[in-house]
Each structure stands twice: as structure tokens, then as C-alpha cells.
Image 1: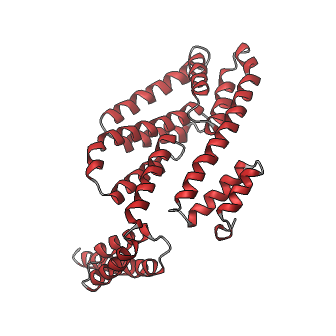
Image 2: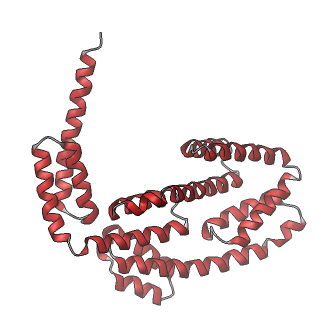
Image 3: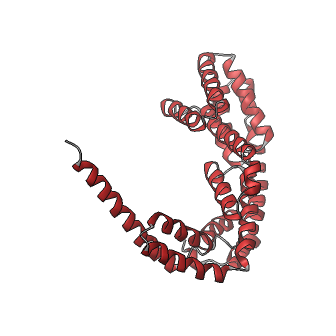
Length: 288
């Protein structure tokens, strides 16, 4: 799908044709090029809402069709089914409650040992999170998944832990964000969103930050670009390459298709790589 050949009219037509999945794919491609188009971001929210309604119906139907497994005490099969359904509706309470119920039933039967193992993993993850060691918590779960890739409970634990970390970071940085610049706030929200893109809370936060970014630069984009270009050249000529790179990235944040910024990013990175090589070579020369 060529993003340059897609426009909002085409995407809206796909919606009218009753194909929100196609519209969503087209919109994702469109946003790769026009990531600052607020109309497209707003449409994305509408399309996701339509897809969510369809997915809820699919999940409800699948849950109803699997009721017989409860009578047969096929708790592991139920868990596998529910975890396949979960990406469709991550925040659907009924499904999440059934996952917890199936997991509890599994622990109480022949899979009790596996359940205890999961409980131990959860305890260790809780310890890491309470200590603010978030990366350690994620690494611990990932290593457990690597050993038991077919375990759906571990997959759910990973997702839930990511969301837990996001909530903690939002709360911890609440005061700092009030003092941050609009671009700084946007970068922070984008970093949290990239951690768990299925988290609807972060989709809303990123949309809000994106809208603020658009308004922030809307009235001064032209003067900002002119000043940014001048600053990049000055910093480059002064051999302040790290600062020059920061200035280039700032310009790209505002105008992601700027040929000037992309050209100078290559130049700056070349200089930084060259300096790093010289520093490493000099250090090698001091080793006896």
C-alpha cells in the first residue's frame, strides 16, 4: 500500500462501504506520511471505535460458543482461546474476568504446579515494580515467556505489567509535565504509547499531546523553520554536533518531510560517528 496514493476521501469511502478494517489499514499508511494531520487522527479514533464494536460482537459470540468447555473442565483450552481473543478487545471486562476465572480453575486442578510457578513470577514482578525497577520486571517476564512460549497467562501478565508501569510513570511525572514544554510532553507521551500501543488510555493521551503540538507550532511554523535552519548551520560550524543533532530532530518533529533536516541529519551523524571513532582509536593507543 503506497501511502502517497491514499487520501482521506478514499479512507472515508472505505468506511461508507462498510469495511472499517480496510479503512484502518489505509489510515495507518496515510499517517506514516501525514502524522500531524489532526483530521486523520480524529478519523482514526472513529474507525477504531467502529472496529471495537465489531470485535466486541466477535468476542461475545466466541465466548458463548465455548461455554461447553467449562462443563468439560477444559480450563487450559479456555485460556488459550481467551488469550487469542484478548488482542481484539484488551479492555473488555467480561473477557478479562473469564481469563482470571479460567486461570483460577486451572490452578485448582491438574495444572496447580504451573499456577504456583506463575504466582511466583507475579510476586517477583511486583517486587521489581514496587522498587521502580521497571525494565527488570519486563525482562523477568520476557525470560519466562521465552521458556514457556505457549503460556497465555504470561502474555497477559506482560501486557498488564506494561500498563501498570505506564500508569506509574504518568502519576510520577504529573507535576513535571505541567512545567514541560509542549514538545517535551509529546515525546514523553509518545514513548509511553510505544511501550503498549493497544492501551486505549495512551492512545487518548497521545492524541491530546499531538493536538497540542499542532496548535503550538501552527502560528510560528515558518519562523521556527527559518530559525532552526540557522541554528543547525551555526552549531555544525562550531563543531557542536550533538547539539546540532538535537536541533535537527526538533525540526523533524515539526516538519517530518523536511529535505533540509534529513540532509543535515546525515551530515551530523557522519561527524558524530567520526568523532566517536577518533576517540575510540585514541583510547586504544593508550592501552599497553
